Length: 193
Image (cartoon, rainbow, N blue to C red; front, side, top):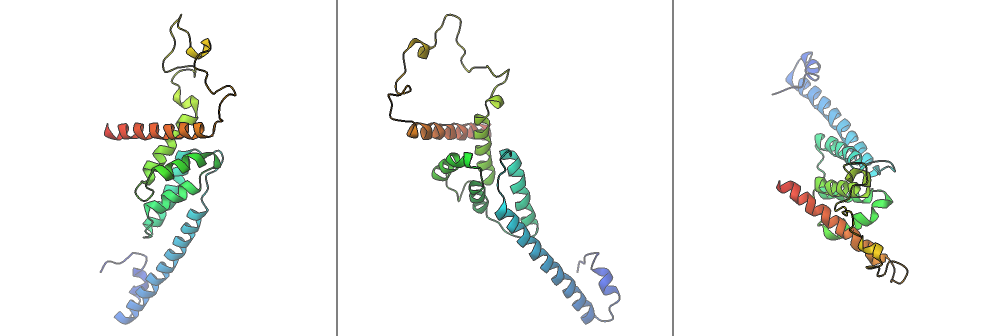
């Protein structure tokens, strides 16, 4: 029988195996009670997690993952789907549209926490123009050569944009869906490489 060093001193003074067994039983039951209290505290902390206003996705990921890991160390099984749903619920309001798209496009029972965070981090990078720029921020994917004119500056291609359209509702959703799809494609390419 393997015995923890902290328990051994308790049984060295025992005169019989029955007394030693009782000391061991009491010692481990006390530990189980402490363990259950810790698990309940961590569950409460997990349920109360909310992303802060100035918090980046990667920082929030570390906090959530740390809490989940502590529960797992104590023997508490927590399903990936529970973590994914919790994170989607606890994001800031500015993430609502992205969360809705992920909920509708992905199977929340099969998406991993890491995949979710990867998608959120990619979207966060798209929202922060300074993180996409390599140089000073004025970089363009296809800069115009001298003498070439921008099509929109010539008065062409201006369909619904200047007040003659039907609104922006669906257009915004389609743009967000396109961004999420682009992020997913980029993540797939990264995993293939």
